[in-house]
Image (cartoon, rainbow, N blue to C red):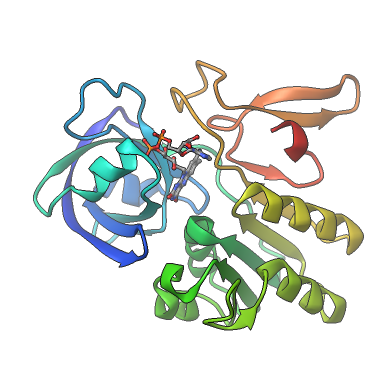
Length: 263
Ligand SMILES: Cc1cc2nc3c(=O)[nH]c(=O)nc-3n(C[C@H](O)[C@H](O)[C@H](O)COP(=O)(O)OP(=O)(O)OC[C@H]3O[C@@H](n4cnc5c(N)ncnc54)[C@H](O)[C@@H]3O)c2cc1C
């Protein structure tokens, strides 16, 4: 990782309810980005907000030198980010963290994402480019769903659920996942989304004995392992559990290790 860089915004658009897709000219990040990693962005135009905001990498093209992120407006930082225009510059640190790890003998991969958590698993599905990738994505409603064509292009089979049934299965994506697991077990699952969804996936990974990695979107301070704001509990044989830093040791952890209740 290099130090912070000023990166030019080449697009920033609303793609679903409260959800934006932003493209940056960032050749250094693009050349090094791995699925599951994130960039740490200084909030533009507000010197009072000292902490950067972590956002997962949604796509990166080494050849063209761009990086894309998808983010949901939840507070002032993401609101200011949503107002950024083409031609503006953002102060970006990254790529940060340890991404998903998929071994060369993986033949059948399930990636599971909920809401803005679908963004990093889309990047994983498109990068780990072998036949046998099933993508499960869940949203509250059709209004919150984004870039479905992009998801479709990134995997071999796409399954969608919305809580109101406006697109795909009516209910939770974890219900669709469990149905599939009863029929067909993958070599590995990768997931990111709200904590209740991750807990359900963690339980299924144990029940069906499928190795699984979870990307935690914990609140974060420095992003480089110095401040411990983002500590999460991870099982440890000797001490019961130890704390690890989501930013530096994660944000991806094996589901059998991470203790989501304590996260
Ligand atoms: C590794 C990582 C990757 C992430 N990737 C994405 C992504 O791809 N897309 C995306 O939309 N968001 C992502 N997030 C979450 C994103 O960083 C926060 O939503 C953002 O920092 C909020 O900033 P804000 O100033 O708008 O909100 P704040 O004013 O800081 O907070 C507004 C509200 O959101 C809550 N909140 C803030 N941060 C988090 C968080 N991390 N988890 C849960 N609740 C939070 C606060 O408690 C508060 O209620 C990621 C977080 C991490 C740690």
